[in-house]
Image (cartoon, rainbow, N blue to C red; front, side):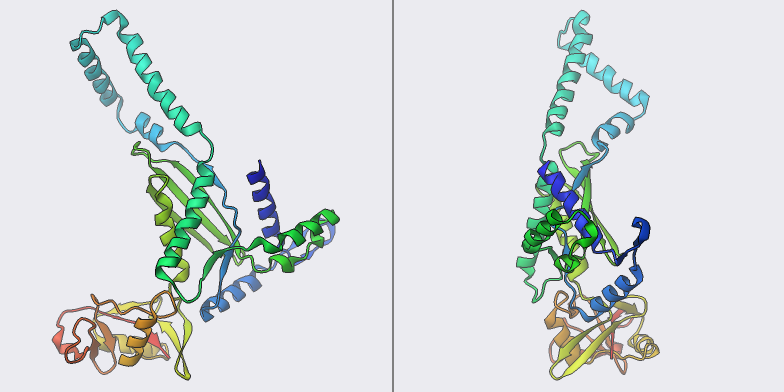
Length: 344
């Protein structure tokens, strides 16, 4: 019950951050367009910290294991399996008069084991804790300079709750106490159709600006959130386009490719024309190298060694070919595809 109350309070507080004014008659005026513009602007500048409410409720969904066990086979297949079981029991010498009672006992025992395993509480708490731990582990391993996704620091909630106890009206809450809150996360889980003890977990992240993100993975309960934690990290930490990064005393804007971040082209000339259409250009060798050293998690773009990168004047950046220089002529790579992004 404490967890449910905390979740309820958290969602209520989050909703108050959406309220711009309290209209007569109890109606609420919301201005989502302003939130969207602010969120997009901050994303472009790469300074955003998406701060999520720390309580993550998980709701149990349909048991896909039992569903597939009942409907995953035709009736004739189920009867054939039952017939095979009966024949095996008869060969072992089971009295035919006790056959049905024995089958019912075995079936009841399996159902009882599943009931005990599924009825024990705490799966939602474990999944929420595992998600936070997995996400922090990824951040420790990748160690970016700045963190773009975190859970809301509730250190100011004491003051917030004091205001709530002192006033009966929600509209009197000081929204500045939770102005750093970006949204909430919630999820569902169900037993996977494989019936081997793994879960199918879905996590939803809803931001106050209107953006929504959804992540899904399947695995054992103690491991499944590692996959989702990695998905969340890559989604929010990866370099967004457009964005700006400082190189020496100059500021470089990463525009990306048309309709995407890192694009692909049939030739460096084609990539160069695409950048010119966006009033941008292809990066130089030094810019490619520097942004690759910065990395995908700090506002740069890693030049993967398995790719060829387009440069101006029909030249190619080949990270695998360092001797004597990674800058080569396009004629050395007939029929190859070239990666690129535009800068200005």
